[in-house]
Length: 379
Image (cartoon, rainbow, N blue to C red; front, side, top):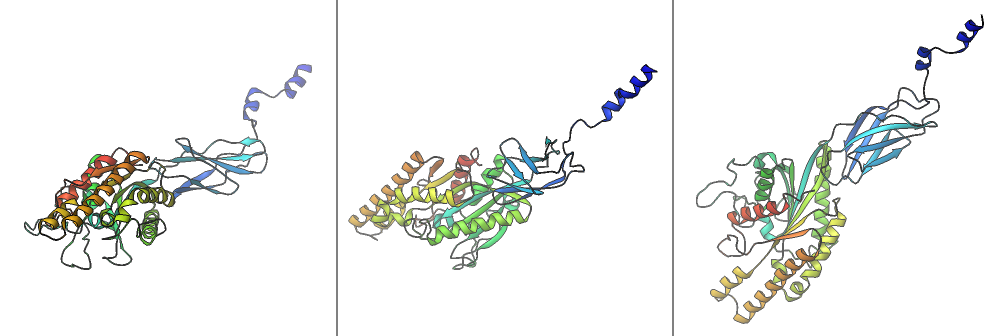
């Protein structure tokens, strides 16, 4: 009898295994993610069981590690999404007994890289015609998938005031002053070069203004600076609306010719360019190390041609050449002293007859040089 009583009082091995081992909540279910500008929002449904006490909150963790988020509700926004890391997230519930098991990791969002192209007329492609006026051949000959499978959004005072919404790269950029001729800047060679490198999800953000000055028009909080920030923000929101996770991969700057025409602006170019880069990186949702690639500009070929045709007095031409050298030296110095700034020289690139603007071949070469610099550095 005593043995029978003892057996009744001691639970069997099978019944002990079936008993709850903790009061933790079970795994949250229905975890999903949605992109934002510089963010990813994680949402979920509550666990089937809250355990031995009410749930007090949730913890979101990322894979790879580096992003966490806590919430008392059924969603949490993870910030600092400024690169193309294929982020995945898991959620765990917390109650009075501790934090329970994590949910399965989510599927990464589709990432797109936005490359910003900005500056004045050579960034526009003022005399770089998409259809060669002599051979009548189009630059968009189908040799690169980037032409039809990358996107471009462009804005400038010579186009539609609100800019052109994202379209395939080969969409005709037609200035208001010449409806018959489509043009292009360095963005075509840039996109093609990055495409060849394997960067296939590209959106070009092109904001340009011919004859514009860094000292006046592009200064921080100036009209063009604010337009660039606003247009870029709108493009990022457009990508989000398509369910994509956008990041700014690089900024490509081609400007300086107008400042070289004025002694005061040439003398202040180094200071103004440094301030512009710092302010733009702060105003845009990009990583601190996002590459800033500048084309080292020059008006020297145009000045020499002008002087040859007696378009300026020798003393005036000499002054312009000295100011041009000052701007170029500033661009070299900024690339050497400011973190993650790189440059490529435009001096020997093919030019249009007046020697001020790059030709179509020159724009393609410049874009390829931009891509070569940026290919291993895009964030």
